Length: 226
Image 1 (spheres, rainbow, N blue to C red):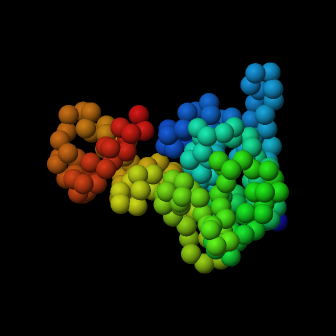
Image 2 (cartoon, one colour):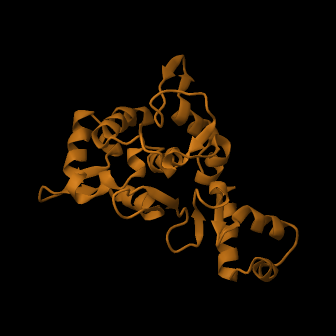
């Protein structure tokens, strides 16, 4: 029986995940469940097959964050064979939500998988450097690895998303507030509700025992999502 991990835990609806990840909801649903477009049926990218379940697991949310970096480049369906190969190779259901494919020792393997699955260059996770070494795609580093925190040790699973970057206190953590974005455990949307009701940043900071910097970060995140 597969080991139950945080990645398997259902976290939020597709609509809410789309809002948190800043991905159009129809796009995220298509990645998750596939569907028909232009008379052609497409298979899911994030799931091995469609399930009809509109609740996303933490692993699916993290992998959607990965796909988001490539969204405007080439048809995302071209990623499906590569992700399937990663699942088989690393024997995990959410390979992109593990740090394993990104570490130095595995990059040559990932490079070979990209070539074997005929992955377009624009979607590559790893490139071959000038001296033959396998190096990470800078886009992956900036838009994914710099915005996802991984556990250390054997599990190496994604444990949180920092959507505004590591310098911001805004976090998406499946263990806190059902995965909603928070600052110091306070939902960012709750902070904006207070702001819209006419409270000042200082008043909000006092109410939630936050710094004004944290309040500003929450507001910035929510307005950016909107």
